[in-house]
Length: 446
Ligand code: GLN
Image 1 (cartoon, helix red, strand yellow):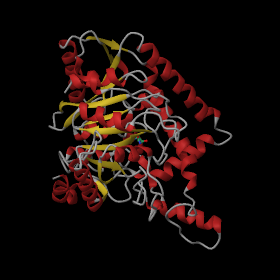
Image 2: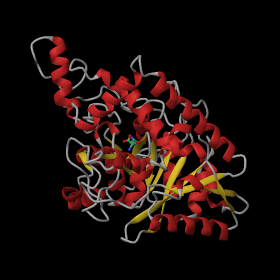
Image 3: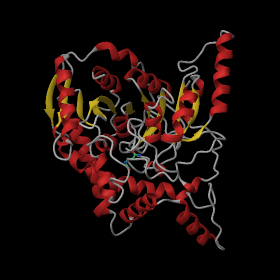
Image 4: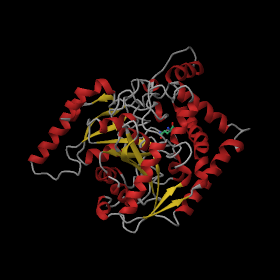
């Protein structure tokens, strides 16, 4: 059924870089055979899952929607891919993204954008736009994305699905192509909070192959969901609900807060003063890390090589042709921010702001269990709306970036529509490792 849905609408939406229909059928048949033979089946047995195309899949092209990885097939599976296979999941394909996950609309893909299933004249958000659109269009009930500054939650909001960025270190990054290593986390998309919780249970937990992996299991998340929000303390973040947020989106966040109060939660206003500097700090730290991580694409080790006589010229020609404009912009920003004369003024200062944000969140969580905000300042915008000026695109991440800088978990859950009839997402944030409480609140908003 899911492959039929893909056949019907994928030509219009372009959620996938690659549909692995034959492999999916073979896996599904193997699951059926195991079931018939009475074998123990995993928790996702036979369930279709779509993978963001920056997750390594053994022998299957992994492009990051970049020309520079042309022809590259990873020799190994990401840990999350191995865990999905062990759980019996059926991978249906690799989804489109902004090149190397840099963007908020999927318009930075080298292979053309993905369209929003709710309105194909609008973007699906990004960078995991393909994964969000795949679930919203019914191409798969589950998908995986990666979230460095909002790339799971923002497209989830714009496509009307649930998207979770787990606590940093909860899900192994082994086999996730690195963008900004201190911020990147893999997480689930689903149509319900319960499905997202199940997928997180399957992919999460310690992995010795990732040195930043937290050495403890994620535990039973689904068990927390039915418990309601009676007595929980919810803080609406003042700094993320005022200026710059579209009125129809702000109204939905107020309604969500009211709904939680009606369900027995104590709702107050909270302040995270340094959150307003999150965007500035992020757009120094993330490009700095990216400029280092992307140095490996030299025309020797991976994918594309543009021959040009000697090696340095080959390196330059390969990178000139292989990377798109946004990736080049980030490499230049990051290299500049890390250079000797500017390191203290930019990178060093951004790291100090990051520490302030961590402290402000910790102070806010002394009084409340979870924080509430919009996920994105607006509903899905039109193609080309924000491509002329990179800063207007970056402003889209204002509500999502603080959680990445703090390493804390956050979820976007659909909550009604905007004046244009398109989905609005409400963000629930929680202290590190409090996914259970966070998802409990999200479930109360469904
Ligand atoms: N939109 C942000 C950026 O362009 C976040 C991307 C992400 O989370 N991968 O960097």
